[in-house]
Length: 107
Image 1 (tube, one colour):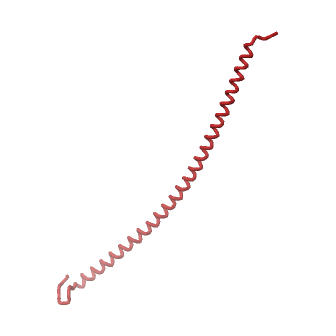
Image 2: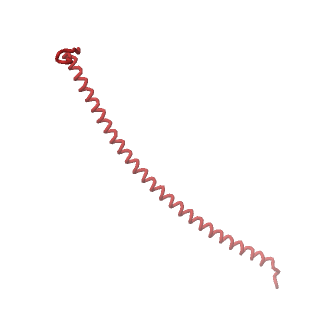
Image 3: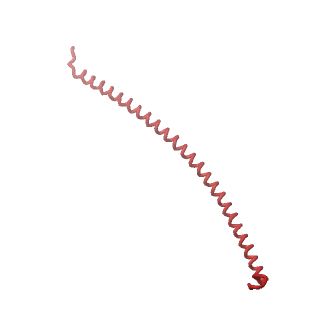
């Protein structure tokens, strides 16, 4: 029970102990929660750092693959050009052979 007296506000002994125990318990609970949150924050930070490393590694692999694909595309374009030139040459040879077959044979 809380009373007003000449000495100020006074508390009953039981109420005083209840208030004191409640404050100590609340302080301990807040401390445990803060410690738990700090631990989880450290774990999340470690997870985020690991993910950043994985992302950087995957970006490096992606860049390497992109470079390889571009090199292959360039090589294939050159090969297409060479094959086109070979086809053109073969067509010319075929046309010449047809003309030679059409010519009357002089015997």
